[in-house]
Length: 247
Image 1 (cartoon, rainbow, N blue to C red):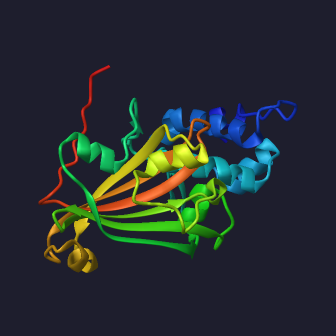
Image 2 (cartoon, rainbow, N blue to C red):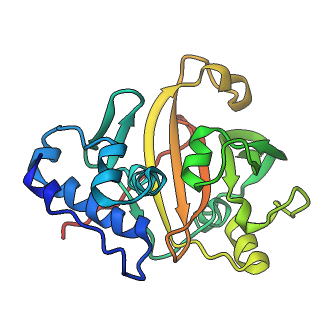
């Protein structure tokens, strides 16, 4: 057993929630050289037994760290420290509509659909809710002058209270704040590329054309999950820019 693992302890008398304590202990494991070098983290049952907590508590903490991009899990294999990933801390939060308007680009919803769906495993894990619980999915094909360049699917935590009757024509985060008192302050983003494939017709793109895929995990000031959003962008119409300053 590793030395760093032997030093991990939970304070069961503390008022700090157990999953929060476990999360902080896992961050110490993540920083340990042996785990940064690719060694699998201890299995859930081993950590639960060592710390005297439930496997669900361990899972809640590892879910959080996975969606921050710090851990990667492969079913039946194990959990490892992830390679460094971008996590976007925001000084100013913009909805996509407001962000585009600031650049002088008028955005329209070419298609908009709102429906209740059953949460799949990925959504349930991020929201920490039961599998197949009802959640609101907002699907929007967006563009300008009738020409689409991005397709979004957003899923919202049922805690918020969104319904299918909301006015989703207004900027989304303004709606969340003004009607539901939900303020969003941080997103963790995963960016990748793929071929347009089955989305080609919707995006009016060649099936073999590359598209940008951006997954966004959105949190409130208490670091609670608010929204999971995935966007598919036409690469010939959209450039995603990141401004990074040296510390």
